[in-house]
Image 1 (tube, rainbow, N blue to C red):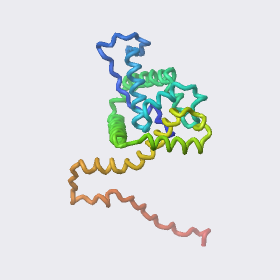
Image 2: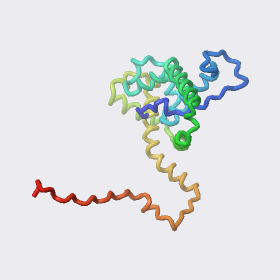
Image 3: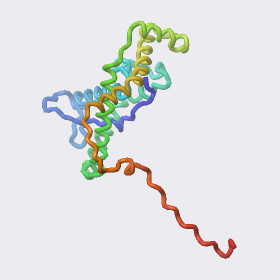
Image 4: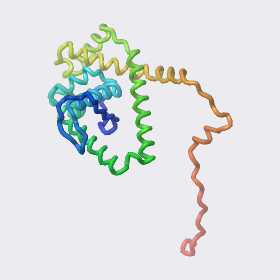
Length: 227
């Protein structure tokens, strides 16, 4: 299980207000009504995105969120804090306010900003797709989970104090991380095989991508003082 959390400002959320949304309005920001349904959808999307991109089981992610931060291992405390609903709501409303101001100022209509958004969208789709394909190939038997649980119990006193079910959950997450590292190159290679590539033989790609050599500046003539 990875220990690094993706900052929420790097996640791309699409704000969709359904005409059939009759849930209570939490507050209105410059005409944008944040409803209970909209917020719950955004929250679930965040959980789903992080679980996919960070290769964490959604069930395990929710267990971390539901615990008191003092009960969560240090490496996951930041994740616990960010996904507390009260904290996520503040992040969510701030994103909406920033988006509103950015649109009013014409920022989002700039071509350079549109290009960045296109790049972020491409990167997010690629990460999520690869993660999903890898997850389909992950296989963990009960015997593997039990063996890993025993190994972790012997190596970590905090794990040894957990119930067997919690220990098995940690063990499966650890095995999944290991298998993911092994399966990732295979999935990426398979994706390449499914794409038809036609190279332009007239274009020297190696020369184009080669680092540019710095021009050698001529030596300055010696000054009278240096003679």
